[in-house]
Length: 457
Image (cartoon, rainbow, N blue to C red; front, side, top):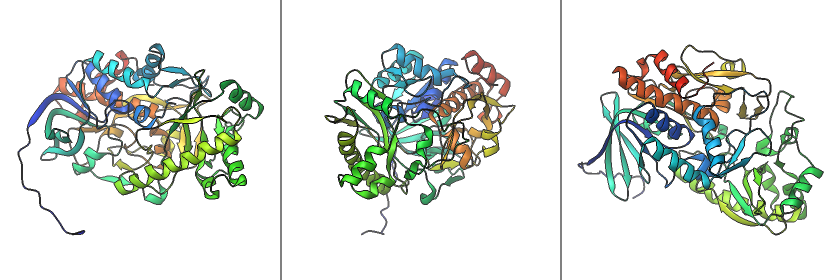
């Protein structure tokens, strides 16, 4: 009966793994955390619910990790930059169309991530869904997972939550804030096309180039800029959808959600990282919302393909190559951190004694767009990764604490990698000191991050 309750009997759960550092989630934050901790000399286990590492890069298909980078952009480098350069070296990246970065192939990066994990000696555990934390009072000492093997227990001396939704922290009892559904950034279904006439497509782009000013007035893509972004080139798509509505080819209400960017067009005829479906009003922590958004997003993507065939040069014979493995979610739960980032921090070059890396003045979300073209940057403090209310846990990625403007910056994959590397190093150093991660010697953390090639200031 709906609304009733079922009481599960108590059960014994086998402990199948014990490790120094346990990282839950393998997106840019989690993968960076695992690699950094292992390179700092401790034993690391990396848990992932899907069958590949890489998170948004591989499972969602977000191939533009650093599309914000321009001539005067200043950033942390470290493992985040290594993701790009290693992918390029392994044939899994091409130069990005609008920036001084690489477009990372979402499929090829699966192999890149496997290679990095193996080289670092990280213990991989794919196909395991986090279910619950294992608690010792207010201390997180491991997790319970569910898989084809049933329930299993993993114990750890240090735990890093890189789930993106603060799942470990939230279920451990740490205070979190969930953005109201009506205020959440839109979710997206990414897709890729095959059968593009590359030469004709590029000629069309050159004949009718778009800028960031074109983002204004297009549904979820309506943005405020500082003005300096307005004349910069953007691989933007909106006109094909407006023309298709005029033709009666696609429903008129799709003009509220269809608009966005393409990533790379290849000699093979593939047009990748089509980030053109943006659907507001879906909560990424609600499985019913996720179900509706996945299905609605795929339907909208098929309409987008129809519009591109009819109204984009070089796309008259395209076919859908693939969707991302899962929905792209930008905004859900955030911890209440020992320090929560603010708009002033990301807009006014915040400086912190416990810096674990820097990130450029790049803001993208909640109707704001600022590109880092002037050399400005802020520092990311270790305290931002420390949840209140629980011990022995760091949170890295888009679920760290901060206000709306701060989140519009720190949620980006490049910043998530900075956080992850900092978290992994802090966990490793705290083990050597024998102290809680919140009490770790910041000087030692910064020394190891410097050794790993991270710019701190």
